[in-house]
Amino acid sequence: MIVLFRNGEDEELYDDTYLLARSPAGQWQYPLTSSGGGMPEWVLNRPDEPLSDWRGNDLVNLSAQLAHPDTEWVAELTMMATRRIATVQVRYAGDVIDVPVPASGLITVPHTIRHVDDRAEFRGFDGSGELIAVTHYQPLTDDDRRYEWPDALLWAD
Image (cartoon, rainbow, N blue to C red):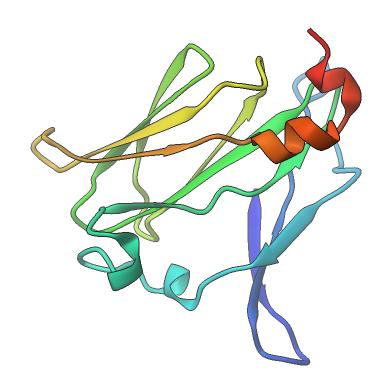
């Protein structure tokens, strides 16, 4: 779950990301932690077409959070889609998830990190089902590997 808020001191837009676990009975558990950062103002107004810094792509990656809500590490896979995109297909760690784009254009899919080198692919389709945008995101980087962040056990083979 992503919560957007405006800081009362500097009026900047920020987000808190909560990756929740479910109990064995299926109930959502209270989050032990959250993380977040700055968000661009344009997430409040879904654009009709790519903005100048989107490099002509109708999808832009906003992912940045990892969490350990239960027994596994989870990546937050978040995208913003222009109004041209009706559906986003997320391919990650061997799974394929089709997500209809809500009116806000903000799509978030939490997913277990199965391997540190897994890379997400986001495929954006228009209303007729035509593929019009593709972008990628790798939750863990070479720097993360070097420092064994966020947990050395995650990097053990």
